[in-house]
Amino acid sequence: MAGEWVGQLIANQDRVWPEALAAAKPLALDPPIVFVGSGSSYYLAGVAAHVARRLGISAWASPAGEVLTDPEASLLQAASALIVSRSGATSEALLAADAIRTLGRPVVGLTCSPESPLASHVDSLTVLEADDQTVVMVQSFTAMLLWLQASLALTAGTDMAPSFRPGLVARVLAQTVPAVERLMGPPPRRTIYLGSGVRYGIAREGALKALEMGGGQVLWYQPLEFRHGPWGSVEAGDVIIFLNVRGKATATRATASTDTLVGELAARGATVMEVARTPTGQAAESIVLPEAVPDLWAGPLALVALQHYAWAWSLALGRDPDQPRHLTKVVRLE
Picture 1 (cartoon, rainbow, N blue to C red):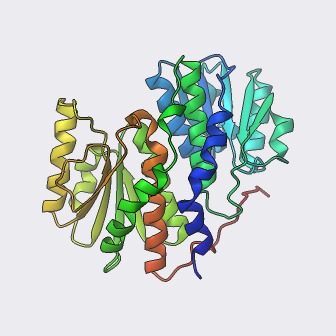
Picture 2 (tube, rainbow, N blue to C red):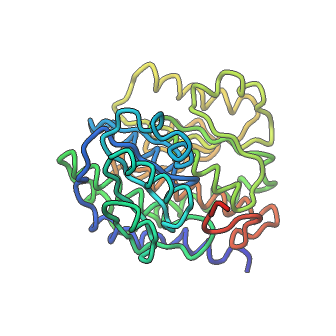
């Protein structure tokens, strides 16, 4: 059956979460920290960097390719680096690690491969048992994100692990599966992903999952940035997935503006699916994230919904998420 393996990975990924959380530890890195990755790992690095800044830890993210080609500009005043690579064999990751060490900065690695060649290119390596055994990153992404979030939290003197109780993935999918089924009749002409702050990297990863699995056209923006040029292209047939950051006590100018955006998008003919702890109630479909998980840590749960959407969209278009076109699990430069 097409997509069977990826579908199982999405539905059962919280099986690898307890180990990822248990393996978390304070980062032995002096800030500022630059988080480095390629593809999905770069989007993961971006989420980690934003979480770090929210916790008061100076950090930013840089693509491994940029570190490789222009290390001085990519590192700036960074005191240390952390490289993320599921396989630990991606050419850019290995070469970027070498470039960072050449400049005298300590660098550590995070991977899901116990036999990763990255081990010989970094000062220390954390290995999580969360390799998807497929081209598309699913469990590996959320497990590494949880490890990074939990480790950053411990570095800042707090503990996020108790928020992640068993059954959270099932709760999200119980809402997502029927909502997405309704959105696939007929399949959307394109999907636009909106997210800001810690959600921006999640939006980018959700869009990438759709491209990798074989979905249609995608775009991604920060919500208020979307109101500029891209705003004019919205029409019927578009699905807009809005990763809204709202709390019951929020009433700022920014949240009011994004709340208004949901209704305005629907008025332009788009179908909006909102993913939030406290949805506005204006979207056609709403995925309510568990209140027990603070918004800063809820990225993995939001991504579960986006992964399922990408999987269902690709199947609706007659593609096989288990066999993505033109892609390999490890990217190696010639």
